[in-house]
Length: 60
Image 1 (spheres, rainbow, N blue to C red):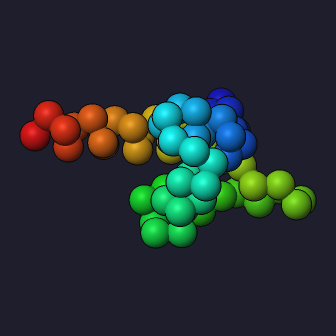
Image 2: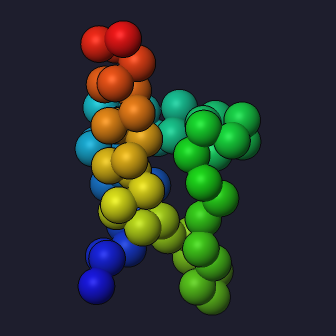
């Protein structure tokens, strides 16, 4: 099962600030969160996919 992460954890994976994380959610670079009660969570695989996409763009 794919673990769910918080914004702080996702930001750490991408080495960005929490504010930048939310900007990327707003501009569509990152997916919208899954809402669980009042909490926002993302699939860890989604954050890793964004990281892989950025690395591919750097190589190309």
